[in-house]
Length: 170
Image (cartoon, rainbow, N blue to C red; front, side):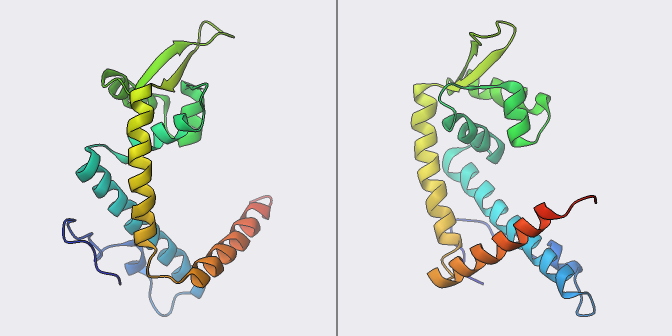
């Protein structure tokens, strides 16, 4: 396991998803738990770094990332769908970002009953800075794998994803 930077507190590993697996479990179950464990560990590190470096949360970062990809803004319902969280969660995050001047609500020109949320120029500036750091953190977290290993893992996970998507009627 690669060593973490000393500025970060250690991530708890004693009770991650993989600890539930035993040698007598099917290899597919052990693999599933390993994937969950890796994803959880990576997410935990990213959460810590966003908090420590930018005093923000992963949900706020994710909402800003969605807005960065949509220059015309997004409806609250679209944000909720894209982030797979409730409208109440989106409203709370948006309220906080709006108070900080990072997003703005604008009336939708096609439907005046609806508002669209957009990044402000300051929101765009701050998100670019966070996104740049975030990308480097991901690069660092995956640095234990050689380029060929990353390519192989990407291909294998792509095949698994295609298979899972293709399963019908379950």
